Image (tube, rainbow, N blue to C red):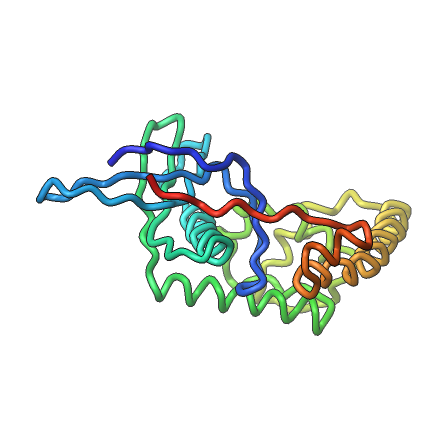
Length: 222
């Protein structure tokens, strides 16, 4: 296998089909030679990681999501992704498996339901202290729990871990955060009407009203 073509770097893709968006480190073309010495070309996402943990399930899920984004954006069947760990110099093939895609989309729909319908985040995972302690979103989750969640009386949960992250916050801190968080939320609600135009108006129509987005370049195999 060799990478013989680079299409884009840090490419931003929004997918209306899957309701996902992401920034792909590199969109590349690879050539694979089989046992019969026949070469085939594939367009795949290449994700670069600087950490030491090469068995991170979140990195795998992220790469799979990027295959979905590229498939939707360019109307091609992206069958695999590449995950490269710089410190270990290890390249991992991430195949697109139906069960994994199904699980990712179901979790995406669950989060979208809580955000759009309930206007709140899902409750913390119960009895999962290890996952919470090692989660990169622990501080953010703890902050929202401190300010908005009212489930402290449940003894069989992970709220004690969340409380340790925010015990120093005062009432003045809370008032400051809530004020600015509400202002940002209001601003985002106004911008939602413009986001709909991306999928509902043609590029020339958006150009007429001054909100033009360039058309993507179709990928060409060589």
